[in-house]
Length: 416
Image 1: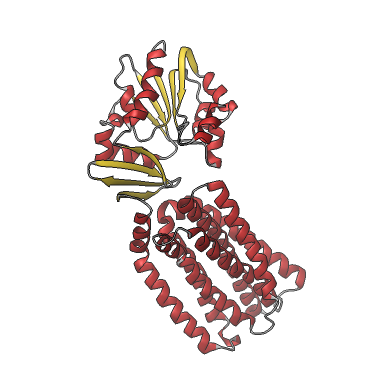
Image 2: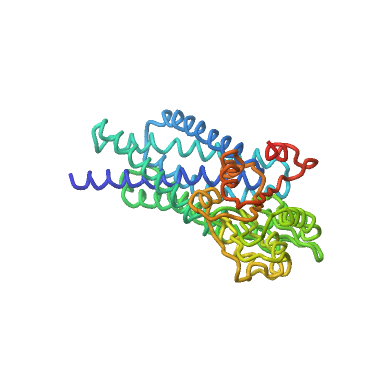
């Protein structure tokens, strides 16, 4: 009886782990598609939908397997581990040679989705030997959903900011690989294809080691091919991917693949953003910048007299650290971030405005274009009304509005 409970516990722990790995796989592929293809809303919708559909196909396909279910489950875990680990490597590597990278990412999403959908029915049927039906189904689904919650939290707060898209898929693969090893340990007496399973173990281990060793150079090679010029800085933060490139004496900053500025002509953006508003304002004692973590708009503000305090609100602390410490940016922004009159605040701009009761002489909105879900609320009527309530008498607000020529949709959206 105790052995039966022990084996059932192993099965449910495996479901928890695979539930964790499954949701992280969906997030990794959605984020990967966004970085390589752009349009976050579309990519997250398509990838998640494809994977959920493929999970249904995998569940249906699992009905065709009536024997040797534990063997099949172990093979699925080894296959998943290799496929998950290679997702970023394949996507970035092939992106260097084809413009149809969407087909690669969507195909990987479908393949992984099918294997994820394959897992739960198999474990449920295996666990049927140890628990009655209603308890079995409830326990298996419960552990899968709990695993999904933990996986989502780990992806948001640990995996993406610290491991990035290079090593998060490998960590994900390790989960499936460990589940397979635990099954080999606890259920080996039930195997019918021992040689094939041990062969799969050896092949998977070799491939995972190889992917781990060569993932970074392959992804760096593929990422470099996405940019015209040499990458001199690349970092995945908790919120975004920051990349700086160089050609001769000129530099470009990209966030999530979208150009933010070029040192060749950035003053043509930052000077008209700042100076007209500062000239029109009644006074300059208290200035608010929303976004602008590169410090370039701030550089222009310090050129005006009467500035006593500037509050710069940027969501990403890594961006402002980059602007304060990287020699290229400190040269471009003329060490604007080192001025003692500056107050740095790292939080969502909307939340800051709601929680703060200060009044400002000038509010400068230097945010990216409203092309992602997380930015939409910063381009709403309510948001602008909130900002207006924070202006002093004679105060001025100015916002970047992209280009009516190169980005007419974004320009018209902000104008409205």
